Length: 186
Image (cartoon, rainbow, N blue to C red):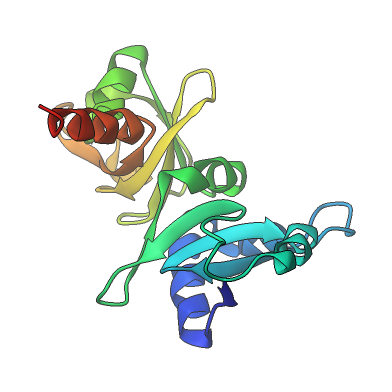
């Protein structure tokens, strides 16, 4: 486990700012001001943890430590950062743009499909085209995150069958991945 380099921090913060804007500073400091949080890299994966947890990991050798904290994503071989669905709770908490889905659109999204305009119950104001957005159910349960295909201003005039949110990650990924691994056993 090691701290992120300046380049890695820049890539991570650029990706996070797409979804949570300037709220990144809220990730690093707790509201009470007592607990600090850090990002650390373990085998190309970025983990988010408190400084207290970081101190406790010092008793393990680098080879024995597989995971620690919450995985926020990973760096690809080409050096790009990709957010993981495990970061959804933190992203949803501080998101600047949100989309709420109707009941008939929730299952469609969780199955890995993009969000159509017809599936949207409501959307945050001032959401920008190609900006990051958190997808929620009507009962405010985070379902995933994606990128807007159109801005809020374009929402009223859009065709109901047009794609409005490109799916980046959703909570159904775990089930789809497990299903794919089960097929290999045959």
